[in-house]
Length: 282
Image (cartoon, rainbow, N blue to C red):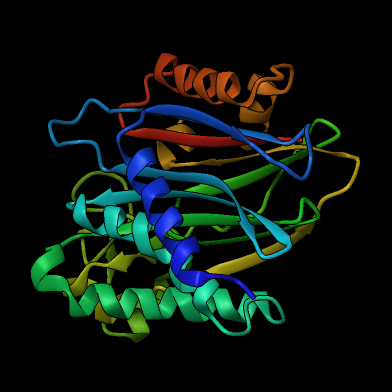
């Protein structure tokens, strides 16, 4: 039986530790070859850094979970910070997490979004995208996302996208059916109600009637052909394709060095957004 109080006290301490670091690494106890690294770089905007990373291996009873996430806030630091501290906790508290993992993740995303909306007075306006990855016993990877942070896996040198970019143009019909609109003014980026450049997000109470927080969920088996996977905010994907990102780090064995190299390459390509990435090397 899992001691949940002890587990989540450790979990929250890990959140606090990763909040202040702009780079870091860790390794699995189940597999000596499995390691992760993360790196963050503040963008060129005048606001504070709005990206948050979570990257930890955790023992839960006789199972090992790799918990990885990127939270990219907009008009808010409080909401991605809240997600970093609570989303995985909510997922793992779902009673059917082990038996119906996808269903549990979807429900936890909805519950978390409702809580954020209910706490809008404290957490403020704005919102956050999220991409989460749960690696179960080094054998199964479950990825979920809302927004445009992305998960990409590399197998035999080939990039495969596991998440879905929730762009307003792609979801125009759903947004309009809910009474909203999509327009490219100002600029040339499609925005919900002329404001938000993603069609799904946590929070954003003023736009919520026209937004969704329903995640896309993908399950991937890990086999001998799996080399690594990347989670990253759009500060990387605005300037690099999936395959370019994979090619950039495929020959770097150290996961932390790989994450740093990926961020540096995005900066070299003139990415002006906040940049955050997690690399998990098998």
